[in-house]
Amino acid sequence: MVQRIREWIEIRTGISELVRSQLIGYMVPRNINIFYSLGIVAFVAYIIQAITGIFLLIYYAPHEDHAFKSIQLIMNTVPYGWLFRLMHVVGSNLMVAVVFLHMLSVFFLQAYKKPRELTWVIGALMSLITLTFCLSGYLLPWSQLSYWATTIVTTMPTAFPVIGDFFTKLLRGGEQVSGVTLNRFFAVHVAFLPPLMLILFGIHIFLVCRIGFSSPPFGKVIEERKEWKEFRPESYPDGHPFYPYFFSKEAFMIFLYFLAMFFIISFAPALFLPADANTPADPLNTPEHVRPEWYFLAPYQMFKLIPNKFLGIILQITLVILFILWPFFDRLKENNILKRPRLLVLFLGVLSLWAVLTIWGSY
Amino acid sequence: MKRRRFLKLLTSILGVSALSAFTYPILRFLTPLKAKGKGESIIIAKREIPIEGAKDLVIGGVPAVLINRKDKGYIILSKVCTHLGCLVKYDKEKLLLICPCHAGSFDLEGNVVSGPPPKSLEKFQFRIEGDNVRIG
Image 1 (cartoon, helix red, strand yellow):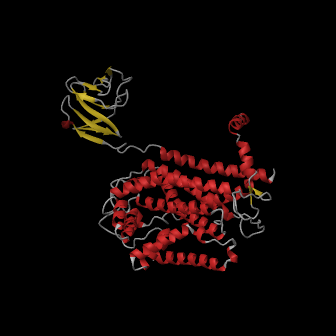
Image 2: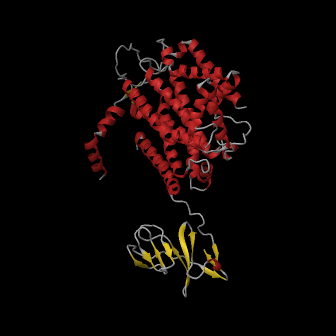
C-alpha cells in the first residue's frame, strides 16, 4: 500500500529525481564545517516563531484594554498556553542569537566575497527585519516593560531635526504610545513583516542555491579559488554529498537549538520575562531601570554615552549602512581572515566593543 | 543491524516521539475554554418574575429564559433555536417563544409549534428554595 502511494506521488512529482540531484547528488566542500548550518537553524527558528505566533493569535486580543489580560489568559488559563507563549518569547531571543552567529560566521569565513555580495546584503536586511519583528512584538503584551521600552525607542527619531517629530508621531499614531500604537505595531508584526521576510528569504535561498556553497578558507582541504568573470555555479565534484553528510550536521544543530530552547523553558522560564513584563502598562507611571532587550543594549548604551542625540543616531545609522554594504567596502581578494591581521583586529575589536557596551548597558 | 540503519531508525523514533509529544498540548490548546460561570449557582428571587413574566439569563455561557407560567409554574429554557442557532424571544401575548430568523415557534414547554426547528428547546434543571429559584 505504502509502495503504491509512493509510486503514485513519484509519477506525478518526480520527487526521487529531485532528491538524487539536489540532496544526494549535490556536493558540498569537503572541509565544510558546522557553522555553515546556522542559516538553516535561523530558518527553523523563524518557522517556530511563525507557528507559535499563529497559535497565540487564537487568544491574543490586540486592544489596549484586553491585550495584557489576554496574555495572562494564555499563560494561566489556556491549556499549554504557557508552552506556546514561552516558545515564542524564548524563541525570539534565540532567533536573534542564531542570526547574529550566522552573520558573524559568514563574516569570519569571508563568505560575503564576490560573487556573494548580494547574498550578504539580503541577509543583512533580513537580520534588520528580525530585529524589527522583535521590536514590534515587544509592545504587544502591553506590559509596563513593553510600554516604556517602546516609548524610549519611538522617541529616538525625534533626534532628527524637522522630520524627527513627524516620524515619531507616525510610528505612534499620536503624541504618546497608546492603543493606536498597539494596533500599528500589531499590524506590522503579523501582516507587514512576514511577507517581506518571506520575499527576502526566497531571494536569499535562491542566491545560495544558484551560486552554491562557499568553501571555508581554512581547514583540511582548500579548494582552488578561481577568478569570477562570468556567472557559474560553484561546484565541488570531489566534495561530500549534501545528504547525508551535511544534512546530519544541520540536523544536529537544529536539535541543539531545540535543546537550548527547552532548557531555558524548563529551568529559567523567567529569563526573558522580568517583573515589569508581568505588570500591566501604566502610561502615568514609568518603572525604574527601563532597559531594552539584550540585543539592543549595545546601541542603547552607545546612544546614552554620546551627549548629542542627533550625532548618536547618525553614527548608528552609518554603522548599519556600513554593515549592510560591507562587501562593497572590502574589495581585497584574500578570503582567509587569519592572513589579514588588520581586518581580524577590526573584527575582534568591534565584537569586544559590542560585548562591553552590552554588559555596561545592562547595569 | 547496520550502523546507518540503526541511526535512521533511532532518528525516526526520536523525531516521531518529539512530534507526537506536541500533539496533546496542541489539541488541548485548541479545545474551547470552559465557559465562564459553568458550574456556578444562579439565584433569582421569585418576586422578580410575575406570573407570565420572564427573565433572561446566561447559564454556562448559554442564553436562557426563566418563565413563570400560569398554573404550571417555573421553567427554564435555552433561547438557542434548534434550527440555526438564533435566539428566540418570549412573546407574552401569544405565550410562545418565537425565533426572529425563520419564524420557528415553541410553546412554553419548549416544544416546536410551527416552523423549521427540528427539535424542542433545551431545558435547564433548577430548584425552588423558599422565595428563590436556584439554578446549578
